[in-house]
Length: 160
Image (cartoon, helix red, strand yellow):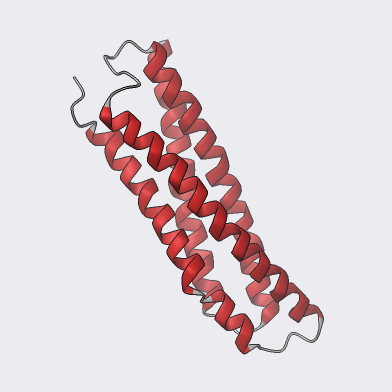
């Protein structure tokens, strides 16, 4: 395999990690929202941390190897191409929105852990936090941006 194939392989591997992490995070988040016991909610939200690690690694790989592909692959792409600029903007927005949601989710997880340690009784406030529409909307927007980036990377509008 040549340089282009290796760069593309590592870029696509990063994309798979991001998409896989997003799907895992949503599955665990939905499962947590369906639970009542704080210990179960805390466990599922802790497991979401593994998905976040996959997303983070994937985001770094996609950016690093994507930029390297543009720079040196000789495929006729440039940093000024609209689809590349759009992907970079969406990449940054997705990370920012996901980070905001992650901070709120971390606080909810910590609250669930406190309740679990104090008797593990169901809590209406914990249920409200787990189902809070603000982090859900932030996570949804972040996820949709990731899928939009994927569509741009496949479609490459205007590319030679």
